Length: 117
Image 1 (cartoon, helix red, strand yellow):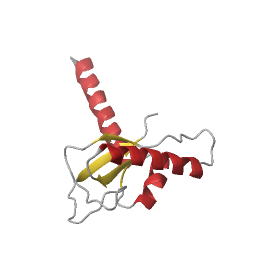
Image 2 (cartoon, rainbow, N blue to C red; image 1 turned 90 degrees about the vertical axis):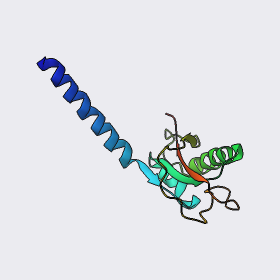
Image 3 (tube, rainbow, N blue to C red; image 1 turned 60 degrees about the vertical axis):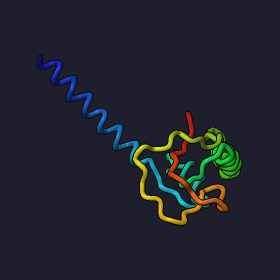
Image 4 (cartoon, helix red, strand yellow; image 1 turned 120 degrees about the horizontal axis):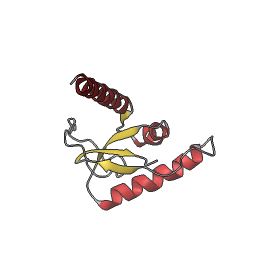
């Protein structure tokens, strides 16, 4: 019985630390000028986006190109960002917020972007 209780506590502690670590590495970005720098800091980016396949393709291409240009360490990842998910719990999206990549469009929701390592 004690082992099971100890195991459950250990598992709970590990989950709590993982959630805290994840949350420290989610950066809310509303302007493209901050996107690639935050991505290169090994963060996930919460950004306002509009719907459409072209949005994800443009973000991936542009962040890849900028990451390669900023790269100081040749071993650093230079692949572009991809959409990891559209979070179920959406932060408030202020009226008039523009899409992070297609600034001629209004954002429809927040998307979470990052790299797969």
